[in-house]
Image 1 (tube, rainbow, N blue to C red):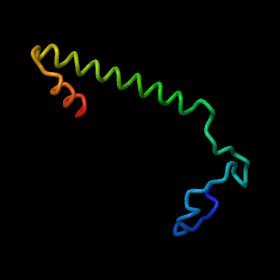
Image 2 (image 1 turned 90 degrees about the vertical axis):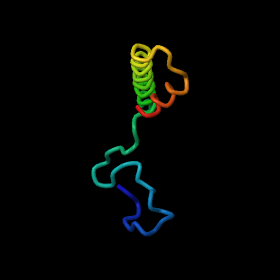
Image 3 (image 1 turned 30 degrees about the vertical axis):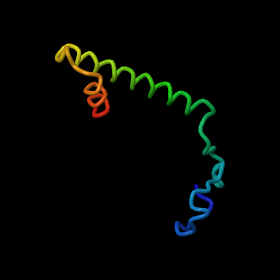
Image 4 (image 1 turned 120 degrees about the vertical axis):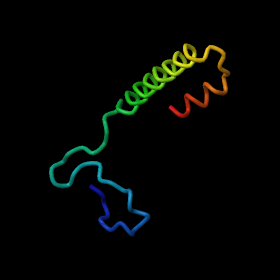
Length: 75
């Protein structure tokens, strides 16, 4: 998978082949892979933040923005 097998050659440690030299498998991800991951991560973060906000709004109606930010960061 890596071009240089020696882990102590720091300049070439992270260099990879684009395809497997034995079977030809493509090591590069699909073009839209990272965009899909960003959209899913964003939606998950918004859902968790809304859940934390509703939890605080129901249990502590007079909470401040700072306590919400701290609680959201901890969660």
